[in-house]
Length: 223
Image (cartoon, rainbow, N blue to C red; front, side, top):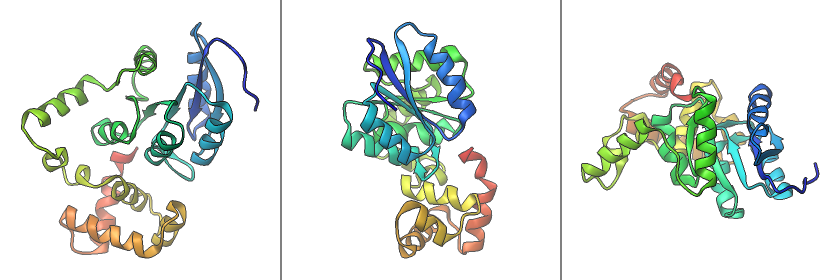
């Protein structure tokens, strides 16, 4: 794909659902000052197109083929700090919004939001501001007001997991085996097992069977 020379702000879409990309592209291209310059369905494709197209903004999902959106955000911030990032996802914002912003995203918006809200989030991030919902803003302000240095201390057990632990917990809930998780995340099986031990400890679980049941039961968090 070649770069289209245009005065419009260029937006790259990174989502593994073609229908979502199609609908979002139609919405964005209706804006007189915006244009979708490319689409990617995986983390690898996203990185390749960001390098080739140098978009002004990349809109990414949390769940992607060959990795996840949080890891992609971290990579983009490290390699292409000039590229702005907005997460558009169906994942629970209460669990993921803070993580996304800490990773380097300029905002987080749920796919269930109205088109007007999505466009407001896009323009907010393009203006250099942070976009998160009023619900998440209120949540963060309460944590800050409580004087806690680590916001995870006041959260549910699942929310206290690190980004990598949550990623592995999510994959376990989807029925992915340890060896497959290691391959997908480019880490050793020993590292995955170490994370599993930490996850069990944080969740107050004793066995791997209990962890698997808990991950499956809480799979709604990751949808």
